[in-house]
Picture 1: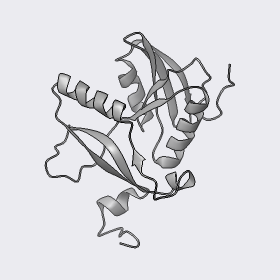
Picture 2: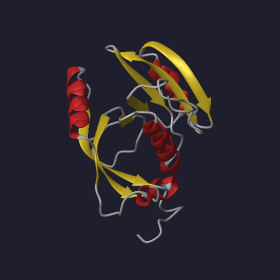
Picture 3: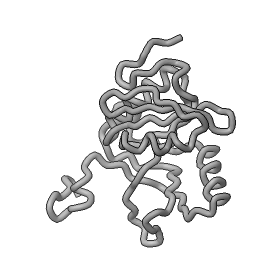
Length: 173
C-alpha cells in the first residue's frame, strides 16, 4: 500500500482507477450522488474526494481547484496511487456559434497556452485525448440524447484577459 498523498489526502485503495475532475469542490457531492454507494473520502485545500461504484467498477470524483497548477498536483498524486483515466468535468466558455449553454463539449485535444504543461513537455508536443475515452463519451452522449460537440479546447492561465480583453488585454496578441 502507498502512503497518504500530501495534497489530496488519499492512499491507494481509496479511489478508483477512473476519476472525474471538476474544478469546484462544491460539485463533488452532487456528482458522487450518481455513484452506487458514494462515500466521502477526504477534503484538503481545494481537493475534495468521493468514491463509489458504477457498473461494479470503483470510480471517484476529485476536485482540482482553479487552474492548471493545482490540477497537476491532484493528477500527479492520483497517478502515484494507481489512477489512470481522468475526465475533466465542469463548465467552460464556448467560442463556436453553433454551441449553446448546456451542450456537452467533448475535448479531443487542447492548445496548451498556459505555463504548467510546459513543465512536462515541450510546447510542440500536442495534448491529445485518449481516443477510446473520447469515443465512450460520444457514445454516452448519443445514448442519453444530449447535445454535444467534439473539438479542440484552448487552455489559458488568465481568465479575465480572455473574457474582458478591453479591460485586461492579453500580452503579445
